[in-house]
Length: 303
Length: 228
Image 1: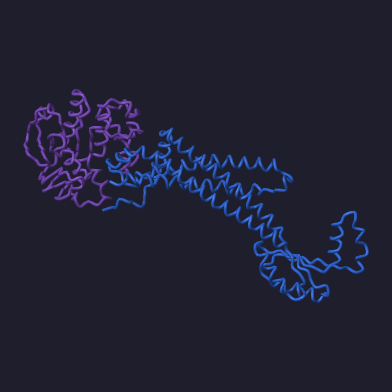
Image 2: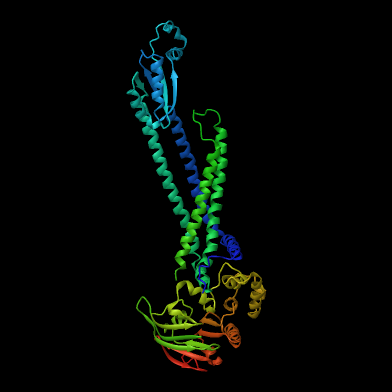
């Protein structure tokens, strides 16, 4: 005796289910419209905040990347010692870049800082009071403090400076912004899932009689499920396409407007971010559409 | 064809719908099930297409043991039975044609065979001109005829009807009854619960009367036997 869950479904039958799924969408007119709108609106909000959060994160990264460590060497350090310190620095895996600034260059930059009055400092070249230094950046900005402490203990290093107080505060701010953004986005994503699956559930609850009738004529559970599955998937995808397109167009326009240095902020480039967001929205829409319809049908399949 | 041996049905709320029912219905019979409302007629009928499970006792149908039937086998037995209800139970968002075809799609009948067979059935119930109508565009009698076409489309050897004329006027009821008679003459077993005294008395078939969950009368060529 063959089991109900005929694993090999006839292709023809699959075609029938897809066909029926489309028909159901069309014939349930208002219900479909309500569900698709719910998906569209929630996913649009989610998409806007995703874009926002990604850009805030991006800006926080840019700011953090400007953190660097100034490593001042002993005034007495000669070429040999300088090279030794450089070798030591290269051994620290957390360090991303090391720039050597000899004292002559340091003085030039120092003078430039005085602008027109730089001639006041003329003559210092003879007896340069500045030490040689390295400018070090870590690959992960948050490791700056730790790395700085380690460098400070090296021989021939007289002083290490990375603007400790400011940097600590900066990291506190950026971390808070990131965590808040993450919690917000996750919360929003769950709300969207709940709202969408609930709307889809309502459209199916309204059709529980249909499921009863299908069972009476001898339809197997999978035979009943498939068209609903297709229908849910379609509602989710259609509902996601609209906000995805809106966001793609909107973000493109925003980037055009903000081209050039607007408020010193540079936003993430259109590609790949907007495609990623569009992909996420489509994925969520499709998944919740299928999942929501399957869950709702399940309730009525029990005898 | 159908046999019940000492069948009891107690619902979860404690009501005893059936109390020790023994009955045997042979292939090709036409059986009326009569009795007051709430006597257990509907339960008796529902047990046959496995909408309900007996609390106690054995039920055999088409070679299946219904009281032992696994849930996933239920569709299988239903495909051999045509079921008709007082409220027609058509799929509201499908056309007349699609409603009848649905029963064939369910058994994964070859696509080519579906159309001619559905049209044949709609011809039988004289609704060929309404193939594209939706159920809410039809009269009660027409809807019941669609339900009948759907019930018969897969050539079941048993048709079960629960008050099929309950929502229909007398003339329409007779039209429907003629169709049942026709089906029965072709060898299909018919079991019908009904309150329609006129029809039962006129047709003179086997009558099973149920009261308080027991069969109190079972006679060939019987009468309705209750005052309205």
